[in-house]
Structure formats: structure tokens, C-alpha cells
Amino acid sequence: MLTYTIQPKGLVSPGINTCQGCMIDVIFRNVLDILGEDTALVIPPGCAAQFSGCGPESAITVPGIQGNLENSAAIAAGIAAGFRFQGNDHTQVVAIAGDGGTVDIGLQSLSGAMERNDNILYICYDNQAYMNTGIQGSSSTPYAASTTTTPAGKPVGSKDLIRIVMAHNVPYAATASVSHLPDLRKKVKKAKEIKGCRVLHILSPCPTGWGYPSAKTVEIARKAVDSGAWVLLEYENGKVTLGRKPAALGDVAEYMSMQKRFAGIGEDAVATAAKNVTDRYAYLEKLAQIG
Ligand SMILES: Cc1ncc(C[n+]2csc(CCOP(=O)(O)OP(=O)(O)O)c2C)c(N)n1
Ligand code: SF4
Ligand SMILES: [Mg+2]
Image (tube, rainbow, N blue to C red):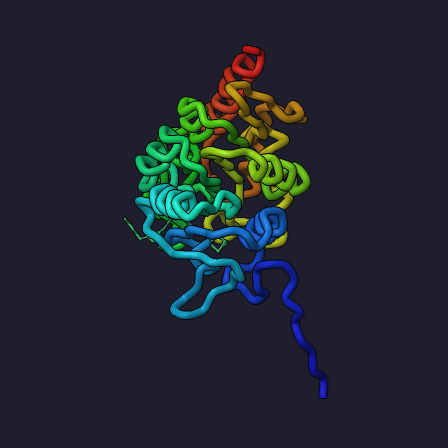
């Protein structure tokens, strides 16, 4: 009889219930690999809640709590304050929330934590919609993307989370993508060494909600970075540093054509999306030039 055992490796157990091709678990594995076991997690409802468990189950081997969409940053800030009261200045308190739980519903509590410079690491994995409840549009859903609440394509663009974060003058913030894991790991490492409110915004394509074959997640995320639809940058001590210039800045047509959420959009909409991307990049370049 064939027997085998799965050896748990790292701080995330195998066998997560995410869809095939989902890379949220890769985010968790890499983040926890760097932060280590002296970490406490806050995870609100959303696809990532599968890590904090259904009922008594949990896929993570560090302490974690499933909070609410409204208040992940506030819960994390409270836990950090409790640790500080105990004289514990070493445990990393980390909130990992989706875009709906960050850019929409939890934005006020994140804003408060950033204003107070609470000693937390806040990570938003961005799949650009409310995926867990049936692909409803969020304010991170990009222009022209079809969701169940924007079936004809979203008529407006997304809120620019990283610019909102930068406006709070936090000590460290960065964007990252599941297609660029060494870069993501470097940014988590840097965030770990800094005290105060740190924010990471990670692109995490969703085969189910975006409509592409599950084997293409890394390719799609890479196309987002190469076209400038997702810009890799760091913000540290008031200074913006851009990653390598996108290889095909503004060339979003192929990126969009690979995803059913953009199926049927016309040339004008593609041109508008391309202009949004190049305009935003030009703005970010200006910010980066301000020394
Ligand atoms: C205040 C509130 N509204 C709605 C819900 C229902 N709900 C649970 S998970 C979820 C989706 C969250 O979306 P997001 O944060 O983007 O995470 P994702 O599911 O995409 O991973 C929603 C709307 C809720 N739990 N709380
Ligand atoms: S719906 Fe999307 S984000 Fe959620 S588990 Fe499935 S692939 Fe991942
Ligand atoms: Mg989401």
C-alpha cells in the first residue's frame, strides 16, 4: 500500500482551501518565513480568512485572530498596545487583509493606525474585488473590469491606496507582487526592521474572479508589473523609490486580453486604461524625483 505524509514546512500548514492557482498562501508562507514565529496575526473575513481557520481549524502555527472587515488595523493596534504594556517590544503584530477590507471597509481604522504610527505591519493582498463573497467590485477594482456588481465594466478607476498611505507619512510602505518574490521578501525584511506603522500592498491575481487559467497567475502578475498596471515602489522616510521602469509602460492591451473580466471592452476603453497607467506612472516619477 502506498503511504505518504505531508511534512509541514514553515509556519503555514499544507492543504489550504484556496482555489487552484491562488497565491495568497505563497504570500503567507513568504511573509511568515521572514517574520518568524514571534508573530501575531489579525485576519479579517475574506479569502485569507481560510488561514485563520474555519471553526477550530487553523492553517497557521502562530497566534492569530479573525477580526472584522472594518477594524483589522485597530485590532492589530490594540494587540500591539497590549504587548507594549507587557514590556514586549519584539513580537511582530501583523494584519493581513484583502482590498475590500482595506481600501473600502477598513480604511478608516487603517488611517487611524497610520496617523498614530502604531507599531504594526499592515499587509493588503489585493485581488481587486470582494472575491470571497462572489466577486463584487471594490474600490480597488480597476477601470473597465467586470465584476458581479459592475457587469458592464467598472466605469471609474481604483482608489490609489499607496498614495493614500504615503499621505499619512508612515515610516515605511511598499508595493509588491506575487510575480516578484525576491523583491517581496526584501520588502518584508525591511518592514520587519522598522518600528511604527508599516504598510505593504501586494498584487495577488485571482484566477476565479479575473477569469484566466489557474496556471497563469504569475504570468498575469508579471504582465501587470511590466505594463505599469501595477507599479513596484518603496516609500521610506518621506522618499519614494520606484523599482525598475516597466518594460512596456502603458502596453496594457495584452494584459487585459488575457482576463475574462475585461472581455468585450472596446479599443477606447483600452486606450483610457493605458492613459491612466502612463499618467499615474508620470506622477509617481515626479514624486520619486523629489529628494
Ligand atoms: C462589514 C462587512 N460587510 C460585509 C461582510 C461580508 N464579507 C465577508 S468576506 C467579504 C469579502 C472581502 O473582500 P476582500 O477584503 O477584498 O477579501 P477577498 O475576499 O477578496 O480575499 C465580505 C464582503 C463582512 N464580513 N463584514
Ligand atoms: S477566489 Fe480568488 S483570491 Fe479567493 S481563494 Fe479563489 S483564487 Fe484566491
Ligand atoms: Mg479582494
